[in-house]
Image 1 (cartoon, rainbow, N blue to C red):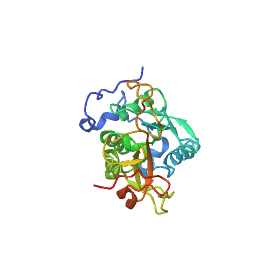
Image 2: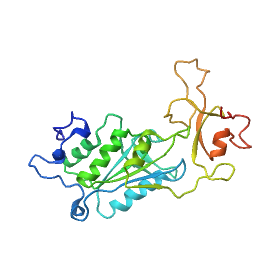
Image 3: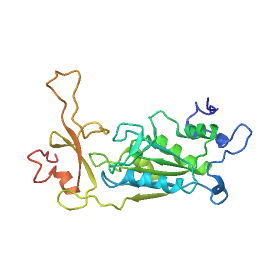
Image 4: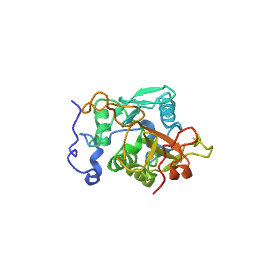
Length: 257
């Protein structure tokens, strides 16, 4: 079984400076020969609305690093495929670790070291769904053991408000980079807002996280009853505010109260 950290039961912020030492008191190498070249790892947060190529870039970055002999871990949470993988809308997929809210990401990396697998970098997809505490864990990994962190996510939720994790990425990352693939609203203006559409209507209340795009049945309802159809659409600020989904959408809009 992987080695258990003696600090596993302590809050991450309360762990001592030697929390990343192995049993012999030696610092566990995380980034190979790069340890002598830099003092900390990089933390970069790439963000943008749906359809701007975040997952595609995440997989491309993993490819570029791995082909140079670096070893990485891929992490995700609630991928669109509903599987433990990073999946691009272009059809490219890679297996990944499915993260839950209780997972200590520093311990995950230590377990990889204990099994003899080096970790030079982490690829984080759907980074907006991680907890703020996990973002802090990743930043400390970069500082203490020089693991590079490349995170990809959506900045704001369907209401246009920052996801808690995205706010923490903005606060802690060395670089915060908007993706350059421009996504357009139906009107042709740049789209920055991910509107949640329920039965053809833009909604402004509800759970922050709803993974949608499919029509699903509720097993507790009669067989002829279905739950509302939910999907997302990228809009510009003006049409996100007005709830206007465009001339081909019908009458399903909800004005801003």
